[in-house]
Amino acid sequence: MKEYCGIFGIYDNPNAAYYTYLGLYALQHRGQESAGIAVTDGKRITYYRDFGLVSSVFKSDSLKKLTGHTAIGHNRYSTSGASDSPDNIQPIVVSYKYGQLAIAHNGNLVNALELREKLEEEGSIFRGTTDSEVIVHLIVKSRKKKFLEKLIDALSKLKGAYSLLVMTNKKLIAARDPWGFRPLCMGELNGSPVFASETCAFDLIGARYIRDVEPGEIVVVENGKVSSLRLPGSEKCKKSQCIFEFIYFARPDSRIFGKSVYEVRKEFGRILAREYPVEADLVIPVPDSGVVPALGYSQESGIPFEMGLIRNHYVGRTFIKPEQKMRDIGVKVKLNPIPELLKGKRIVVIDDSIVRGTTSRKIIRMLREAGAKEVHMRISSPPTKWPCYFGIDTPTRDQLIASSYSVEEICKFIEADSLGYLSLEGMLEATCGSREEFCTACFDGKYPVDVPERIVEQSKKK
Image 1 (cartoon, rainbow, N blue to C red):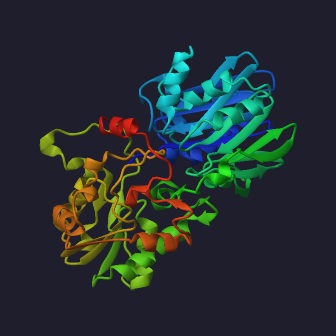
Image 2: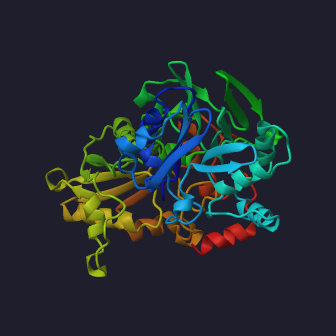
Image 3: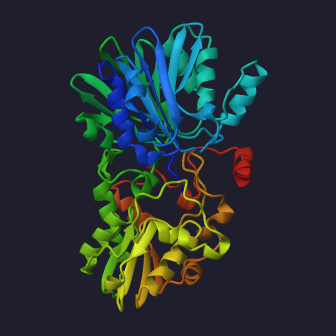
C-alpha cells in the first residue's frame, strides 16, 4: 500500500511559508513524490512546487521568494492521476475572473471521472489528470455570487473523500467531506489559525491543537476571525473515518479522529495477543508500523520484546530493483535481521498488514536464515480483502491475497509456523469506536459511498 497526501495551512503569520515547510516536513510520511507551497500577501498568490522530498524541493532561496502571511502546502503520493506530470503537483493555483485561488486536497473522489467529462463537454480545459483539479473547475464555473457560495456549490457535487484547504488572497478555508474519510486538524500558533492532516505537524512548530475539523464542516478564516458552517445535506451521510489511518498511515505521535494513534496501535497488539496467543521466546516488529502493536503484544503476553529486524531509513523510492535472480535483495536492503538475537528462538513477528504476501514470505525466510527456530506471524489488522477508492492506493482485489485464500492457505504461502489476524471486532474495540464511525470497506467490502462500476473496472487496469 502507498501513502497518499498530507496538507498544511496557516493564516496571518509573517513566517507563513517557513512554518508550512516545517509542517510538510512533519507530514513527509504521507507523501514522498512531490511537494508544494502557495502563499499570499493579500494581493497575489505565489507558489513553488516540484518532485521530491520536502527537504530537496525547498531550499532557502525558494522559501525566501514565497513572501506573504497566509500559506497552504501539500505532500503528494499519487492515488489519482499520473505521477510523472508536473501539472499534478499541488497546491493547484489558478487565476480566474474574480482573482486567484489555490487548493490542496487529500483524498479521492469516486465521481471525479463523471464530473470531469461533464465539465469538458461544457468547455473546461484540464492541465493535469487529478480529481483535485475537478474541484477547482467546479468552483470557478459555479454561478453563485460570493466565493463561499461557489465553494459550497462545488463541494455539494462531490462524492468520496476530501480533506481540503482552499486559499484566496483574503481567505483560508478548510473543508472535510461529509463522511469524514480523511483526518484534518485545527490548531493555533501565536494567534494564527493552522490546519494539518495530523497533529504531529503542530508539535514540530509549537502550535496548540484545538480540535478536528468535523465531517461535513467548512471552517472559514477571514479578517482574523474564524467561523464555521455545515455543508448542506451532510447530516445525512454516515461517518466513515478511515481506520487504516490508525493501522498504518498516521504517525504514532499524532492524534487523529480525536484519539492517540500510539495508544490505539498498542491496544491492537494487546487484543491480538489475547486473540492469538502462542508460546514463544521473543516478540519482534516489522518496523516501523509494527513497532507499537508489537509492544502491546509483548506487554499483554509477557513475551520479551526485541528489535530483531533493523530498518534502513535511507532507502528512497528511487532504489534500483535488481535482476530477477537477485529479487530477494530488495527486502534485505530495507530490513536486516540480528542473528545473535534470533538464533534458536521461537519468534512472534508483528506486522500491520499482508497485501500480496510476497514481502511477508521473504521476511520469514530471512528470519529462518538468521537462525530462528519458529516464526509465528501476527497481523495487527483483519485480512485486507477489498481495494480502497477513497485515497489509499491499494492493489486490485485479485492482487490482495486474502481475497482469494484462507488464513491457513496464506500461512502456508508465507511459510510461517502459524498466522493470526486481529479480528474486525478487536480492531474496533481498540479504537473505542464502532462500525458507525469508521470505514472498514477494505476488510468487509461494505463501501459507505456507492462506487461507480466504471471506476471499479478502471482500477483493475492499473
